[in-house]
Length: 293
Image (cartoon, rainbow, N blue to C red; front, side, top):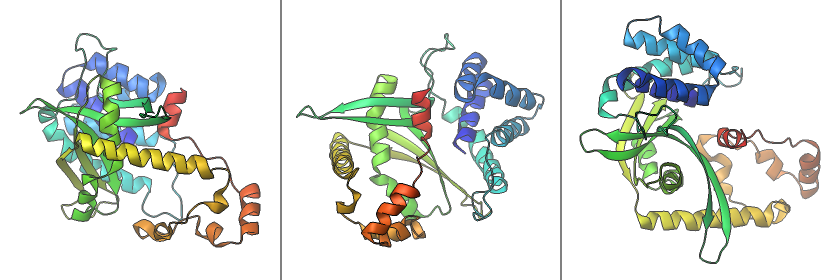
């Protein structure tokens, strides 16, 4: 879905902001030249903007390598395609109000606010250092005010007011505001979040954009304190998980049983056997893959 979100922004850059060279450079950077050229070639044969954007997004989804899981009836290709239609209809007619940041309109190779990976080192007063990586979905400008906003996409099975309120303190948003300084050369303390419901319910609540989500220097300091505590906890117990504290409120967080519940409920001997014989290396995250590349 995040590849689809990126494709919508690239289309906006080309067709609404009239920067086709910037769009092509960005598409090839994110998707690779062969895949992007194939998807773009299909979409430009349409004259209607909505149909053109729909074709581009469906092509991106179809070439993403996704395979449905028979045990997961929510995250299916059909549901993602239905949600894509909802997202396009929400975004298409507001693009001129939220132009994508472009560092230099005369240079297609310059920085644009689409899928920018950051890899920064946080240094604390006692010289302790931690590496922090991630990907900023977008950086946009609110046309009426000229203010910069981080543009974040989220998918969810429910888009309630409680879901929206969770972003008032969410550490990810705070950390991305802090890291944007390293990416773009200036800090933005405002964010815009768009929630997309999968599967859509067709009750008028399937796409939920809201802004502003603002951060202060105080919030960034609290985020840094949290990040250090989490990193030090990992370092302390990564080779000694038996003695790590158990936070059992997470066993059924987000109304879903944790996949490691049986592992944790086993005996110490059973856990060690499972760790040695059943654990597999985790796939790198999209940000880790991008940095590795």
